[in-house]
Length: 278
Image 1 (cartoon, rainbow, N blue to C red):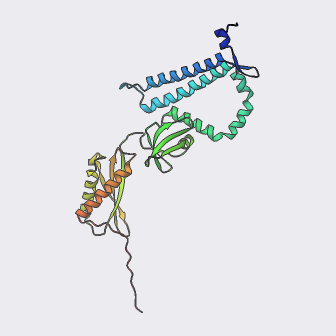
Image 2: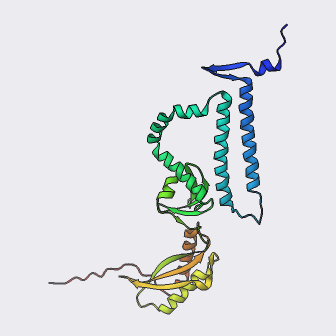
Image 3: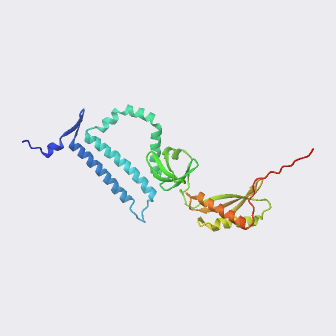
C-alpha cells in the first residue's frame, strides 16, 4: 500500500493553466497572505484609532491615513498572491500596456475619481463628519473612498458622491474652520409697525432658542422696503450646522408667537381695485 506523505498532499495539482500550476500549497499560501493582510490592517486600525488625548491626528486625519495604508497594503498583497501563483507581475504589466491605454481612455472619469480620492485622502481638506454643501444639498460625510465618497443629507438619505465632483466643483465646507456659523432668518412686518419694538422682539425670539449660541451677538437688520412689508433679517450663531433648518423653523414659530403677543402684524400682499363709473 502506497503511503501518501504530507509533501505529496501539498504538491497535489488542482488546476493547470499553461505554465501556471495551482497546487494545494499555493492555495494555502494565498490564504495565509490574505489572513496576514487582514490581521495587519486590523492591528493598524486599532493602533491608529486608539484613544489618546495627546494624539496630533484627529479622527478625520486618522481615517485618511488608514485608507491610504489599506490601499497600499492590498496592492502589495495582490502582487504577492500573483507571484505565488506563478504570474510574473512585471511581465504582466509590460505585456498589457497597450490594453491599459485603451482601458484608460474608456475609463477616464473613473481614473479622475480615483485621483481625486487620493487628493482628498492626502490633502485632508475634507474629512469624515464634515458638513458640506454640494450642488445645493447639505451632506454630512460618513466615508471617503478611493473612487466615491458617502454622506447623509438632512433627510437621512445616503448620498454617493463621485470624488471628482468634490475636487472640481465649488463646495462649501461648513466644518472647515470653526463649528460656530452665522445664519439668517428673514421676516416682514406691516407698514406703520413700531420698529424699535420689532427689533427688540426679533432679538428675544432668537435668544430664546437653546441652540443659539453667543446670544449677545444676535443682531437684527432692517434690510428694505417691500411692496407690502418692512423687511428685517435676524442674524444668529449656532453650532447645529447640519440640522439648522429645524432651528430656523423653531425661531420662526417663536417670532410668530411673540408678534401675536405684541400685536405686531405680518402683512400679506393686497391689491386695491378701483372701479370708475363712466
